Length: 149
Image (spheres, rainbow, N blue to C red):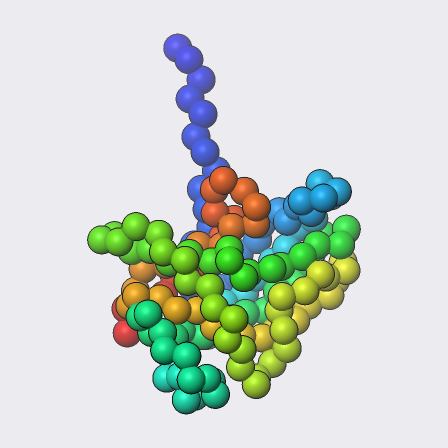
């Protein structure tokens, strides 16, 4: 009987829950453990985030708390690494350059023990499904569940 290799399952994080992943610096290959808590998910209009940009689908804000729970410096850099999908639609890039005036910028490098709470603005085709975050790996590091409405 041959041993079966099961790929590690990507944690699916719902509102109010946390997930962890191993962040790896692409230049130095130093790894550390990061924890992300999904505090809130909400849809917004362009005027609510002070932009004149029109979304392809709809703007969604994920309020996240990002914390380095490891013992080395580690980064969380979501731009270009957030992709939305559901059971009917293949992964779509959901990244935007939009920002909110609330909280801090979560796109940062964190020393051990540091944490930040802030918003990530995404453009998704519709609510429901999930947003996958890729930390330079072939498989998603974490997924965030989007409520259907």
